[in-house]
Image 1 (tube, rainbow, N blue to C red):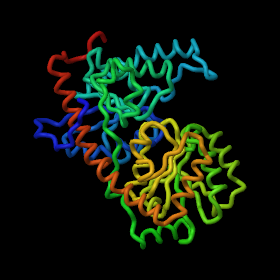
Image 2: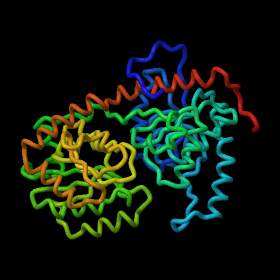
Image 3: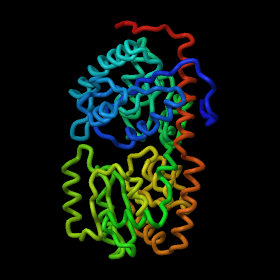
Image 4: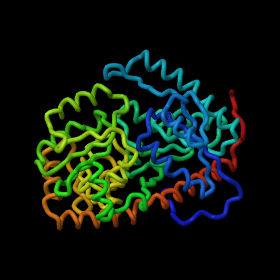
Length: 408
């Protein structure tokens, strides 16, 4: 299952019903990607239904738009550590949760008549995989990012071994699983809608810039990111300080659960005028913001394949980014953008100056960026690959499996 064809799937006899598990607290990359795949998978005969805690933003987002969603009390926050160390009390608590949740998942999937369970977030992986083994439908995991070596990575390997199959969003993420289970992982890179994220004409570029209050003679560096510690927003502040008066750094996004960190970063940037650095808050129009941008920057380090860098390149915007999992697969270093060593702010500044300082270099990067995404990261191709894999797993797993929830 390593080589996933993008040829349209053959005719199907029935719709494949997939129960998606997610306990992410916001509508971030993994959740947005799922929403973008939803209509394309439906066209391929794969129907997604989200199961998540009803208090989450994504639950209300699906419900209010008439998308299929059911409440399921998945734990929103899980950890076996306290003050950076493994806690015996939390370990016991999580073991208890891990005993109860798979039964709830299996029961929900069987009662709802679902064909497959798709675990879309880290803390749902093991629950879903065990649910499959106790009589629930076959399970597929999606790995959106790397994990820190240690207990978390070992738990992921256990989940990958127990699940029927696993999708990783990059080779880098796939290679973080153990050698013994790597063959159970297929790579389907993140993709974007190349019509929505497309290079803007001069009129639209001027219009968006006017809305943002940025004159035509200033260069715009855009970041679209969570304001979380792993995204190193403080390095964006340093970038804004050093790129000069002719550059505006715009940061679109808000924090997930790190309000103190967001407050501290904003305080660090308070001395800079709005012309140099501006926090735009949560935005749902990144595609429009990219119409006005000259450069996209990504400083996150806990990644799988950052959607933002793919979206930017699709819009014909060159990228500078710290090296993290999936970044070198998404960004062709020296052709579509520049990849910088993690936390190398001097390198980040030099990369920005190199691309912004030469119209010829900038335009060459922009053209190559768009071509790269059209060839390798079209969402339509990724949707076909996902649909084919899910159907293949379903056929293979249900040929010899009993139905119904056992031992419950």
